[in-house]
Every structure is written in structure tokens, then in C-alpha cells.
Image: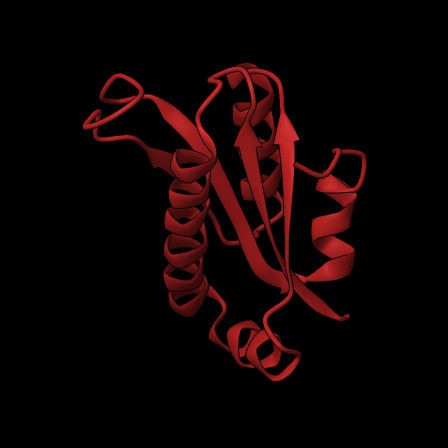
Length: 117
């Protein structure tokens, strides 16, 4: 796998399975849009490889924001999801982020130590 997308989810929010899935889906879609904007050639390569995605977890907001900062500094497509507050958590809560699609080697430098969700 040469390209991948990684979704990083906050576990401290204790979102239900459905809520977590919806937030991860938001991150995936938004990250694809960001990739199209900043690295459109990566997007085509990722699609050709079957759109690999990995979902991992962090335990705190600080961890999520640190990963976002490192991904941005690495020139990766990265987006953060802010909840609208319609169901389980307050409006404005940062729930997860999407990184990529991007070269796996670049993404792994940031996320390879994170545990699967």
C-alpha cells in the first residue's frame, strides 16, 4: 500500500458506535476534499489502490491537536471535525481528524504508534 488515509478518533469522548462512525465518515470525506485541493495527484493514486483507510485512537484532545500540528508541518492534507452538537456531545467539540490520502511512508511517521480503534 503506497497511499492511505488515517482517521484519528478521540476515545475520551465516549461516543457511541454510531456517533463515532459518523464522525469518522465526516473526517474521511473532508480529508478527501482537502487532498483534492492540495495534492490532487495523491487522490488518484489512492483511488487506484482501493482507497485504504485506517482508523486509530487517541485518549485526549491534546493528543489529537498535536497530531494535527505535526501532519500540517509535514504538508499532509489534514482536517479536524467539529461536532454540531445535535446528539451526544456539545457543539464545537473536536471529535476526530482525517489525514490523507497521502503516501503511506509520510503518514506512518506520524500515526504508526497509535492503536487501532
